[in-house]
Amino acid sequence: MRAMATDMTTGSEARHVIRFALPLLAGNLLQQVYNVADTAIVGKKLGDDALAAVGATGSVTYLFYTLCLGLATGAGILTAQFFGAGLMKRMRSAVWNSALVTVLFGVIISVISVLLTEPVLRLMGTDPELIGMSVSYMRIACAGTLAVAAYNWINAVMRALGDSKTPLKFLGLACLLNIILDLLFVMVLHTGVQGAAVATVISQCVSAAACTVCAFRKMPELKMQPEDLRADADMMRLCVRTGLPIALQSALIAVSMVALQRVTNSFGKTVMTAYTASMRVEQLVQQPFFSLNASLATFAGQNIGAGKTDRAERGLRAGLLTSSALALVMMTVFWIAGAPIIRCFISGAAPIALGAFALRTTSLCYVPLGSIHVVRGFLNGAGDTGYAMLNGMAEVVCRIFGALIMIGVFGMDCKAIWYTTCVTWTVTGLVGWLRYQSGVWRTKALTEQKPGEAAAVPAIGRRQRSRV
Image 1 (cartoon, rainbow, N blue to C red):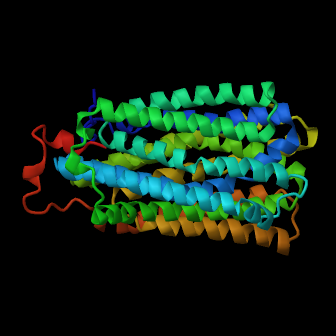
Image 2: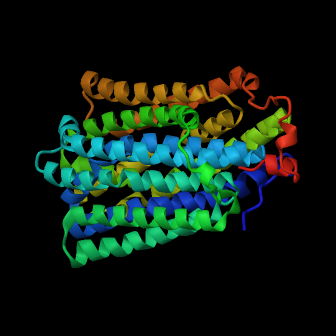
Image 3: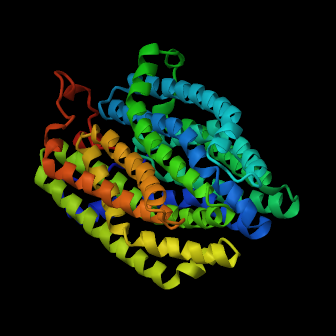
């Protein structure tokens, strides 16, 4: 049965923000199990060189994934809007045509990314001793782009219809399967980094297929009629136009990460290994912030739509207090136990020491990092989506020019990589806060009704309209 929507326009602001974020956090943490499993098994069983080779592909692979992820988000937005308006025929058209767009882009991006794997990795200055393993791993991972796109698409559609639990269950299945296959391919069959990549792709395919079948069987809203199963050029363009701005912001951030990865690669295997391990840990650290981002977007959207701007701002303050408290806790943990945490992923003394330094250094800026996600979610919920591009540009400028200035002008060593990250988070957080203080978001509400729209809303009323 479909999960009920939550009306966030009454009750405790902090409770709404935190309670809504918790299931999202569970899903985000499960998503990271893919990376953690690969890192731990590859690093411990195949060695630091293999881990560095895998790590060298991460930012590039994510860059290729961003278009599909943005389009999936756009599909969810359209599905939620049509469903909330009671326009079920248009909703089914949006679901079907977004599926066609997802498959089309998934195939195109898969082919392009596989063909460009080696040239891109060489352009990034990947260590010649590691290039062979990096190319093998990335080609297999990129070949599975369609599976990544499909899972994120069906996930977005089901959440738009109010069901966030079913995708979580299938994600858990994928994580378990990924770990089992990692152990099988790497430890039993001795297939190296290629086996780790194959394990991840298989688990993604199984999760996407099972979740899609379940959704179309379980949800009566997704029961397609013959007339629904047709390509609609206008609807497909709308799907692309809705999701593309989100994809472009992610792509800008990914480009900045690729640039920083290239700088990292120039320092050799030890630095690459430490960077990979510290990035895996930081990906886990950011999951609560990602969850608060999504929670604030929903909270702000509902309350600003209801004309309760002051309440929306109180929710923002609750989100900032929560993210700051989490940041301080995690900073304390990394200053006390940074080395043991890094040791879970890698073995060499030099990479462990450098990785521990990385965690301690960047943890000093977890408070502005949390504010980036919370303020971004609030502004998106308020309808100020134009800020997304400004935010992405701030990260690109800071990461690229920060590293160039610190290393090229001031002659800093590899530690400049993590100093650059600190500067990036601080500046980007400040840009977001200034955007909020400017009040521009107050003029960006997207809730103007057109004549006749209210009559299309299902009988259960406002609760249905607030569905995420």
